[in-house]
Each structure stands twice: as C-alpha cells, then as structure tokens.
Image (tube, one colour):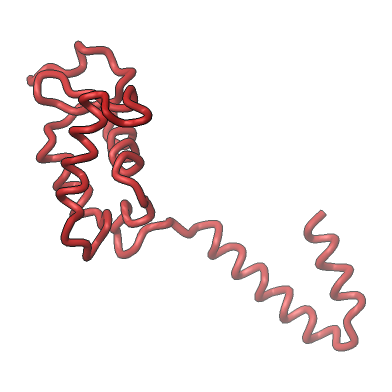
Length: 129
C-alpha cells in the first residue's frame, strides 16, 4: 500500500525523473532506518531515562542475576546518563528502593544472595557458583 501511494505521487509529479530520484532516496533512507540501533557508539543504555528500565534491559539481555557492582559498571559504561555526575548514586538508590520494596513497581527486581535479578526469577537462579 505504501509503495502504491508513493507511485501515485510520482505519477502526479510534473518532472518524472526528479520524482523517481526522490523515491529512490526515500527507499535508501527507509532501509537505513530499518537497520538503525538506538545506541550511540555502542552505548546501548543511553536511550533509557530511568534506572529501572536500564536495569531491566540489562537483566533481560544477560538472563541471569548479577552482583550490584557489575550491574552498575555495565550500565555506566554502556552510557546510561552519560555525563551525569549523579548517575551512579541514582542507580544505587534505585536498586535499593526497588529491592527493598520502596518503589511503585517493587516486584520488578530483587536481591538474593547478593545478586540482583528480575523479580519473577526463581530464587534458585541466585546462587553464586
């Protein structure tokens, strides 16, 4: 349907060659956009505004519980709130809040045996081995 609509626009154009050139540019741009990853120079956590969303994205990516230090290091090195002097403090506060049940959506993450993981993961996943 989209291609049909674009073809109609080309047919309506006075300068057919120019319309075809513009259509080709649109296709190139669409192809580039389809392969676009929302990260900046490999900094894949720059797109997350809140700490919990970045935490959940990382946990989903690795699919296992991790120590807090590792979690914080990966997110900061991955660009979360890059340039913000309080980013690390914000991460620590968010982890504390969500694992202690102080946040609005408290069941999203939990800490068991010093490891942080998704709230729905079974406790047996949280073994240090």
